[in-house]
Image (cartoon, rainbow, N blue to C red; front, side):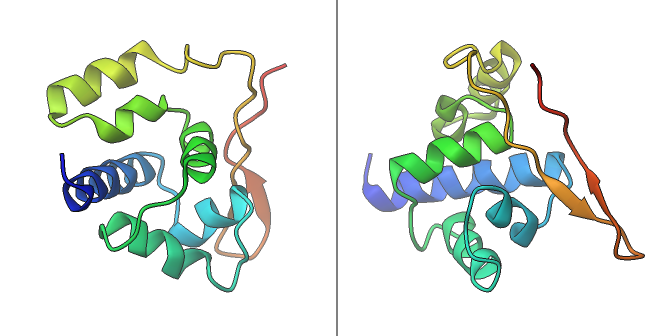
Length: 116
């Protein structure tokens, strides 16, 4: 599979996973350690297949979205769903990354709780 095709598949799955969790580009980016000033633009480039993140960042994004890394490379929707249903059993000892969402009044709330 060509690099552009891989980037397009990865970007589509990243967008789908983020939308399912109702998380903004900026919120997800900040949750995985990206600078707030460039988080939205950087993740947008990944979602649009312009660039592809390095493996370490891919792993962080997968953890934050609570999906196996393999999900992001599934070429068809049925396979992606199977991988998603199988869950995060590839690294079960890792706690999920907590994504903090801002509410409309500016207060913050935890979108996820760490499993201990």
